[in-house]
Image 1 (spheres, one colour):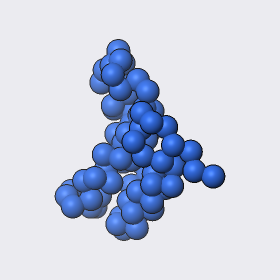
Image 2 (cartoon, rainbow, N blue to C red):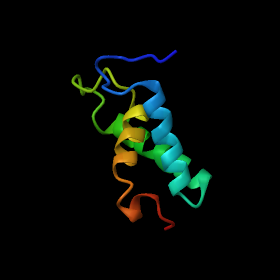
Image 3 (cartoon, one colour):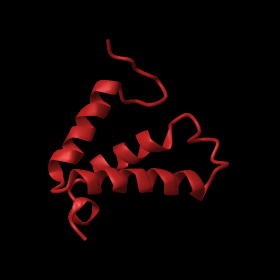
Length: 79
């Protein structure tokens, strides 16, 4: 069963495909997991009063943003 929230514009299956793409593109599964978590945390604390983005959880937004940036190697590359 695929759940789709009209506000997100992305269903759970698509989100899982994006997560898999991030993990597969990274040499280190732990590092990409930490990078996604850090981006979500940073996003959450940057503007806690952001009403427009309140309907999307920070972790979902971080996954979507980072999967869109797969073409930039510094996002998922080893530092």
